[in-house]
Length: 93
Image 1 (cartoon, rainbow, N blue to C red):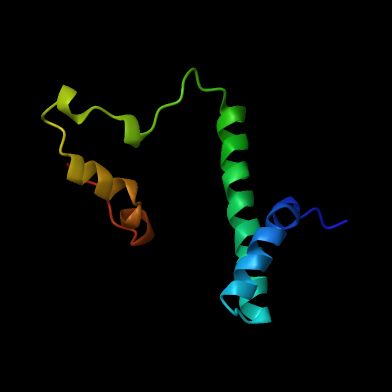
Image 2 (image 1 turned 30 degrees about the vertical axis):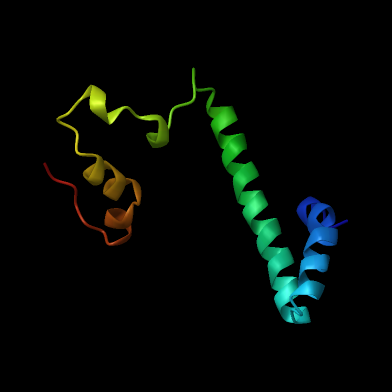
């Protein structure tokens, strides 16, 4: 009824790890719920990318910075964290 596929799939492994590490019930429940939330976020992202119907997959991980030496990898990776948006900073050249 709750549709918790990740909890159902990972329960045996996480339960064994919790017993081995002598984890509290609260800690074990937190691990289960975090695994479910993480998996939901991953699947949501995959669905959105698929729905966007991009012609091919591209990411910063696959970007060739050597092809254009004028692009500073540190700046791009800093911008990719989106901290500037969270701080409400403006981007300027």
